[in-house]
Length: 266
Image (cartoon, rainbow, N blue to C red):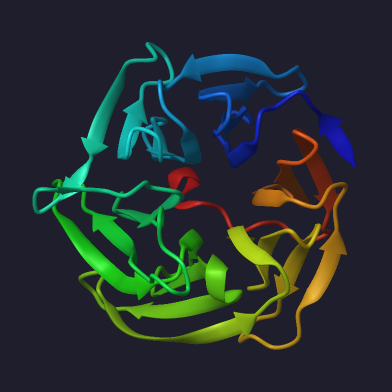
């Protein structure tokens, strides 16, 4: 069901503690805000092409901006914007895409721009609260959406150009000890979220659906959405909110199972 429209390639939906929904507009270059029970409003232009958004436990908005080739922090009150990461070992990022937080505020984010199956140069980075930046995984064909398991021991990652979800087992330092293919999917896997039962929900760009992968992997169930290009998903209670780029809309699916609370809400 469509509940709001008029967005310009919406992506990165994320709920604040008070129920306010934030999302980015890749083609519009700005962040939108949807207050509880209210209408969408332009919140803040980043000056680039914001592609993903996650909320820190202190309420700050963190934005993956592919146009600025940086990860940004935006204060939700003052709207002050600063880049918290823009390069690794002196080399600028290609174009950050999506991001998620761990329990201690460690940030994981993908950097896929210009990567493909023929040119697998995409990377996943890890940024600690102290500002230490490291590579979690590289050699990827457009790493995209990502999320952490309930105990933060597993990072789920969409590798869009190979139409698959990877499962990366993390050690205590947040490094990827080993990884495997969790599921093959139809369409291009993008943003994702988990529910409390361990089901993984993945926006499938080009497939017009959200894929649901059961705990441990297995057969994928497809939940249709209104439009061919869903980009990302976010839970609020037992409802799954979906951003859809072709129609420029925000949609909602009733799931019947609560979403896994993000670390920013714990």
